Image (cartoon, rainbow, N blue to C red; front, side, top):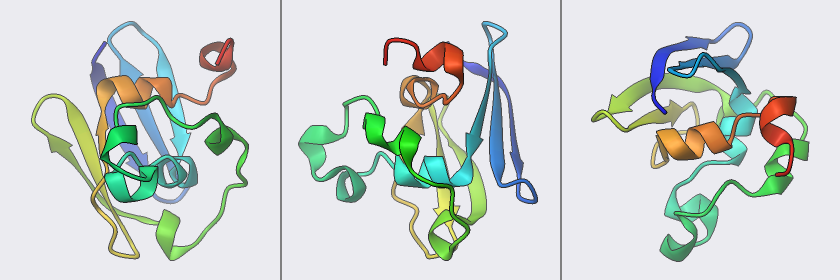
Length: 111
């Protein structure tokens, strides 16, 4: 699966991804930051390929420098990277990881 549209809305603090299978995922910025896939945030290189930690779906949304998006950029044809207000920018959200992070009820079944 691949995105056919990506929109970051800083006023609502949400990232919307429209997928090529017609699914639409809406990610609160704080969810994206709490689930950052970089080695530092995941606790080492050996944990980078894993699915998102299920606990991130239960964390409260917050408005802080750590969860305020400054920029979002494509990484080749396979991922996005986000620059956060606190300077963190090491996470590369590949399409598979980003889809596994979809917080909708349909995607959370069986997670």
